[in-house]
Image (cartoon, rainbow, N blue to C red; front, side, top):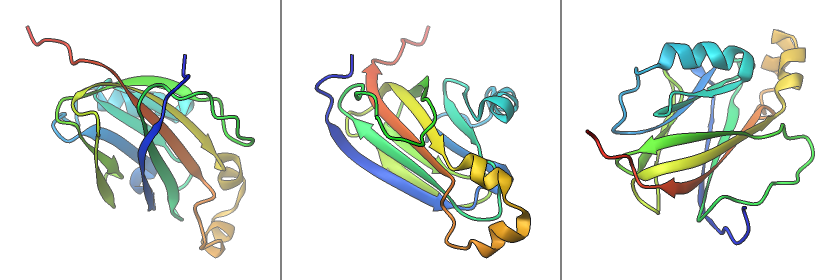
Length: 165
């Protein structure tokens, strides 16, 4: 599993996370379905999904965080990079093939899926949360270079969308 996958592209959002949230969803998915429950799960699990929208609970909302979306031709081999958390794996339905990555009251970016609509596998890892949590507010504001709190999403086409019946 994971052998032979090639990178197809990447997108990066660097922004202050409004309400300490970063979300990823297809533009055609209703942002509200199951969202409250996913946000509650992300409070302890850091990342949660409704199956239609991915929710990341950031450690702070004072300085920008980095959320990188890497698109792959298949499930990528494990990234053996020190300092990153163990990845959490999810599936996301993407009926239009156009993703919206952003924060509820802030900056968003659009990302085209080169493999089009479908069900996508997604693994999410993070680093820098402990440092962000350990810093006092004044220290965070002084560290204006920000982005030491980082999230990496690796996404690949997993299958066709289920038929609506």
